[in-house]
Image 1 (cartoon, rainbow, N blue to C red):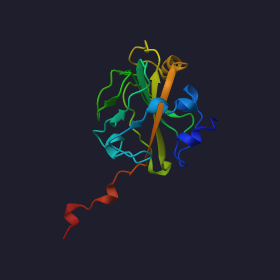
Image 2: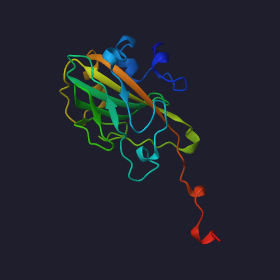
Image 3: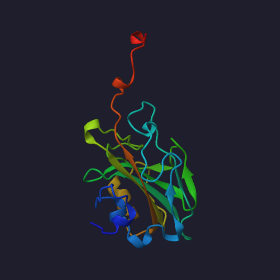
Length: 194
């Protein structure tokens, strides 16, 4: 396991050596050039709103924003994994993002998306059971020195292979999610109200 993950991940987030950030870059590239990744939908280490999970019917991907990468960046890649399982579950791989300051709006369809752990090309909604406890999602942004030539729908293996050796800077944002269950106990039947 990369010891430097301690400086990147919150204390309660598992140090999963299978994470893309541990496999594809090194500590000196984290935050290089002031690169940061944030979301207007949650604070760093905060909880994902149910509207980004399987707890809601019309759930979508959360919005993301990032600062300008180092000069010479050709492309940005976003990878989201669940660090609470091993190997990490791939929820999203997005590339084709311009090598500059940018953002993805809530529910926006990115330019190129690869296959997630369920082998479809979309945001894989977190869907743990209540018994699973809290899961930690690691949003990983990579600034690349060369553009990727992958077609949409590329496999995780192909995406990771294309990124390897091309990362000039990286940024990490984490979020948690714990299923709220079906909510059946949260509501009273209108007929029972006096």
